[in-house]
Image (cartoon, rainbow, N blue to C red):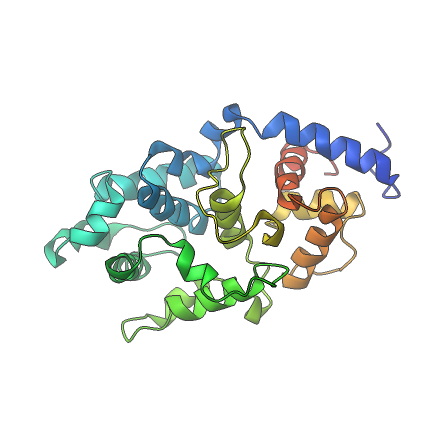
Length: 266
C-alpha cells in the first residue's frame, strides 16, 4: 500500500482500493453496527421509510447512541411507526415530550409526527416528497432535496427551530444525512444492505453522503479538491466517483466510510 500521507495516488490504485472496500463493507454483517439497522427491523415499506428517515436525521454522535435513541423512538410508536403516525391521537403524544437526542428535542419530534401523519393521509410512499420536485433530466438529486426541504417546512405548525434538522443545497449544506437516507432507499443490489425500494429516483442521481470519515479519506485519495465541505464538495466527490462507476457512484460511500473507520488517512 502506498504511503497514506502522500496524496498523489494513481487512479488505478484508488479504483482498486475502493472496489475492494465496497466488497468488504457492502454486506449484511455491516448492518448491526450502523443506523441502517433500524429500518432493517421492519418489513413494511412505510415503516422502513419512516424509521430510515428518522435514523438518518438523528445520525450524529456515536453510532451506538444513535441506534439506541432510534429504538427508543420506535418503542414510543409501539414498534409500528406507520400505523402510529396515521392513527395516533393527541393523548398518545405525551411520552414524546421527553424525547431528546443532542439538539433534536420534543418540539422537533412532535412536528415530525405531524408531518408524517398529514403526508401519509395522501401519499403511499415518502419517495414522492422528493421525486415530485425533480425532472427526469436532472443529473442529480439537488432539486429533490431543495423541494423536500420547502415542502417539509410548508406548514403553519412548522417550528423555526426544526429547520436546522432538514438540510438543503439552497443553504449550501452537504446534506449528508438526507443523502444517506436516499442511498438507503434508492440503491439496488443483491447485497442486502441498502433497500432499493424506491423506483422513480435513479441511483445515478444520488449524491455521496459527505461525513467526516468520507470527507477525510476522499481528500487523501484526491477525490476532493475543494477546501471546505459543502454541497459543492459533495457533488465534486460524486463526480469523481462517477468516473469509477457511472451507474452506481454512491456505492463507494461504503468504501470511504469503511476506510475512515479503519483509520486510513488519520
